[in-house]
Length: 185
Ligand code: HEM
Image 1 (tube, rainbow, N blue to C red):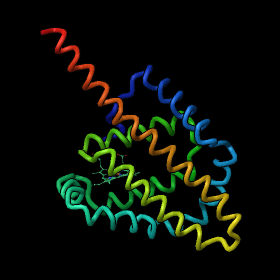
Image 2 (image 1 turned 120 degrees about the vertical axis):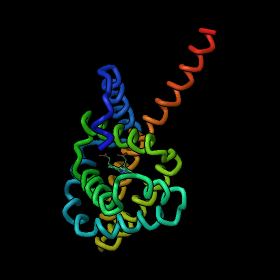
Image 3 (image 1 turned 90 degrees about the vertical axis):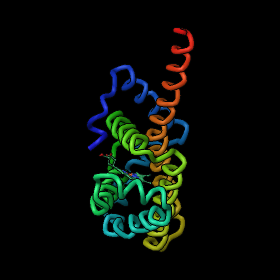
């Protein structure tokens, strides 16, 4: 699929490594968060289809998004499987440079499919809300719930940050190209 198609230049890879580190420091995302995600992953896993169906429902009421999906070769069933696999990854990634690369490529796939950054942010919000419902119902002790939810929320925001970097990069590239064109004239 598209993310494999995107070649990332070596200098961009080091930018992404710097970005993921900066974002982790900013969000106070540490190895403890990774451990908590890994710990709760098997408990959330059986509920992933329910979370994804919550996310897909919101996409389904947006006419523009339905059109994008209908005109894209990716069948809806595959889109559901892709969402489920991605959510599993969110809970199991190590949040290293390889994660940064994958998240950036996912951003690229959507930018190229015509899905804007606002929709990516809102959809991430729905993933976050859906997952929070599930975790909240799953654990009786609310202090424990809070600790896990904080790590989960940080992970979603890290993913979003890396995905949106692609949108920033294409905007910068377009501005630079316009400037070059103006200079050449
Ligand atoms: C937080 C939001 C989202 C996440 C995490 C996400 C996740 C993913 C992932 C992991 C892929 C597979 C990338 C690959 O390996 O090729 C993908 C592809 C795709 N997603 Fe999403 N998605 C999001 C939002 C949306 C929305 C709102 C739509 C609405 C139509 C959408 C439509 C698509 C399409 C059409 C593809 C295929 C892109 C291509 O390969 O050309 N996604 N998504």
